[in-house]
Image (cartoon, rainbow, N blue to C red; front, side, top):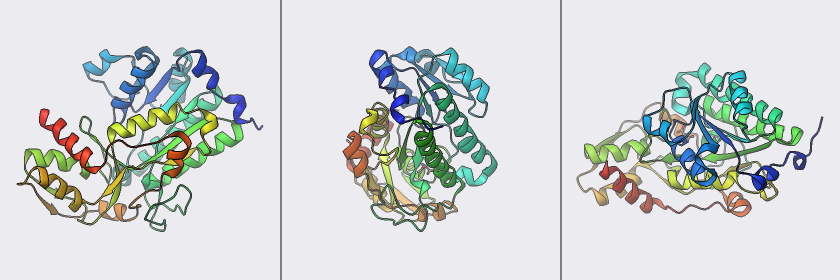
Length: 328
Ligand code: AKB
């Protein structure tokens, strides 16, 4: 049966009371910061953080935290019903490099886990957001200023599962009116939280090594340019996208970009600030993955439709990362 999107619009929820939000996979690189921003905006008690691990005491103190495994539909549904959830943000995923090592688990979490949350969104009238990635593109995609709609033949399990997320979410939106929203994130650089198992992780590790050891051995070659973004921009952008009026969205999946750099470019920026720093290169299996991804993204639709903008450029990000990590 076809339900027009307007019937399932969530504008009513947003205008009558703050949304109640469940964030899955909240202990990953993005989750802690996203939960905290959402709590500032919508109230601490309205944002339920969840994951399959024990949280730190600080996280536990900051607001509600529950165990939630995206593979367990019934358990998720209990949380959605008991906690009167309106929005679900599914951050549970295995990233590109680790996904190649644990293919079955990546398929399960990234596809079946997402399918559970999407089905819950349909059944309980939820807004659902699940990130996609530059990894959804592939070696036959145009690599410069890659647009939202283009050739997409990813060659990693991660990319394949994220294309699945995009297509299934858009299908549920068209067919059942589910308010599905999706951003294609570039590599995310963060000071307080560590990435895990991605191809772009080097862009975080390099800062830690530069400060501790004054050297870094990079697993990607010097000229491997990839799109990147600083975490504060990623989080602000995500919250703004989540709260954008449904009518402003002309599509459901958007590229978002900030700047691009290669290992030799970021190393030069660090060396300007830490002159003793030296980088060496030992490309491994992640090189092939990085070579199949875009060098830069065209995100004009996100900028036009819901006002996406990045505050940090490359120099601003490098300065802020070094300041924050130096304080630790
Ligand atoms: C990864 O490297 O796998 C992720 C991504 C770009 O989605 N950081």
